[in-house]
Amino acid sequence: SPDVYKGGIYFASSVANTSVVYNALVDKTIPGIVDSHGNCEHLRKFIGPGTMLDAGQLVWMTDRTPHEAIPQERDGYRQFFRVVTSQISFWFAQHSTPNPNVALPDHVTVVHENKFDTVG
Image (cartoon, rainbow, N blue to C red; front, side, top):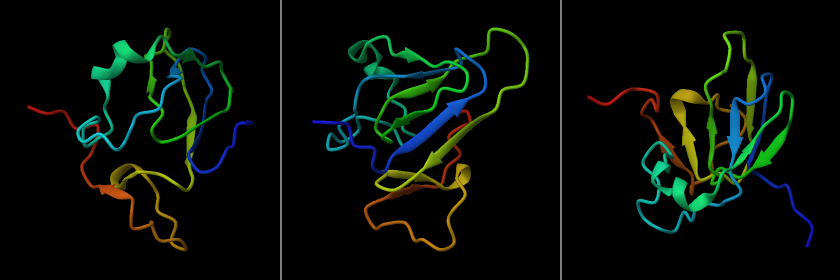
């Protein structure tokens, strides 16, 4: 059957080789499979090498698709965007701009912590 792009996240970066998307889907029905910030580093050995994105390459993924930012090879400016649409599992309140015209669905878990704060 053809791919269906419904809900999820649209993502692109202005610098090549700074983002990786993995051909995997995290099973949200397994308790504790990701931490409260969506980290699933412990799954890396099971999901394969991933696809490094080119500059300007637009991708669609679900919010359960593993993805990561990679340090830039050279100093310089990088621009990127993420458009988070419907059918998501988590909403990171400190990192997202809410739509004042649309309420989050009841099934969405709102995470209020800053996912970039270091622990310890």
